[in-house]
Image 1 (cartoon, rainbow, N blue to C red):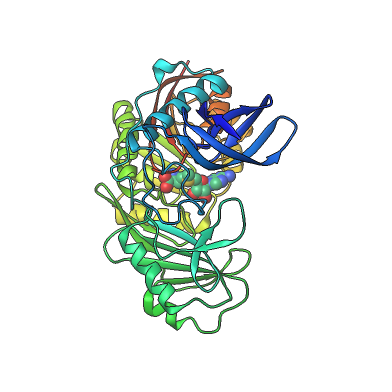
Image 2 (cartoon, rainbow, N blue to C red; image 1 turned 90 degrees about the vertical axis):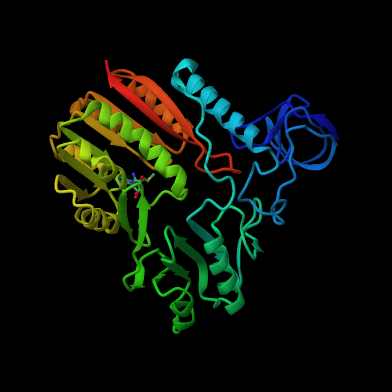
Length: 405
Ligand SMILES: C[S@@+](CC[C@H](N)C(=O)[O-])C[C@H]1O[C@@H](n2cnc3c(N)ncnc32)[C@H](O)[C@@H]1O
């Protein structure tokens, strides 16, 4: 069936209408005339696959990845990078306007990623004796030799692991490298693994996780991350932003806001290994960080020592509980929650803290818009800056400055 693609949805899929139903077509671009096959039909929507491009968009580029058509990792590699940026910028404007009531004028131009390919410092791969990703919309593994999103150094480790073969007990493999030749390898196991020496020969910092993601063994597996002038130790299960160069740009935006305010005290919620708080710690007298992952909090405490930050307190726990229990006051609060955004109770606690300013770092514009709408009762948005942290995918990160009404 021949159709004209109208626009892209928030997941980078082409949209057209067939018999009055919105129809999603992966890999198709606006303005293209394409031949499609409907593979799933529901009451109001269809899902279709692209069979043939009849009229090509001038914005289309040839994806450089040999696995592109099968792999579910990248969704926009067929769109030129300039147009990916435009798409993400428009998507942020659209979502924040529609679901958050934010004026377009408050949204800055997107900050492009310094690297479009090979930018990731971490790769998570599925395993069936060799390494791979899930095929688009299935749990079948497509084996890969390398990935254009991850750094050359990580690709080198993927190659070595594949050459050595992986045991059937290994279900998932995570490799990280942020600076120099400092790697960590984490194997997620279905059952125990007797002999892991062969993996240790490839990467000496090895961690084994059981079915429930609990550490079975981890021997000094923290790796070093460097952002600007600060150094951080990062445990295998602790969060660290994946696009190192772009993280410096994002943290510099936060630094700009903190410098401007020079708060007496600063709260860093969802602080991970303490990265943001420590990055800006020279511009506050007191820093208080909260994070649910105990290992990350151990790292944060060590990271404060490494960076000679003496004004920091880091606490392990759920933000919801910690804020509820402590009657905290602060001039400025930074929140960097996971995709799910802020719990309603956390927003009430933010109202109680009553800081002059809030910096909201978000990796999901939809939950961000929802939360800004609730925050709007007491906080107005000053500006929003989108950052392209994840080129070739539909994801987009945002930093929002809010001020108390
Ligand atoms: C997007 S990461 C941000 C980490 C850190 N700010 C950074 O830039 O590296 C979100 C963090 O929130 C933590 N987290 C998730 N749910 C939480 C909760 N309910 N309370 C506290 N921390 C939570 C995760 O473990 C993760 O480290």
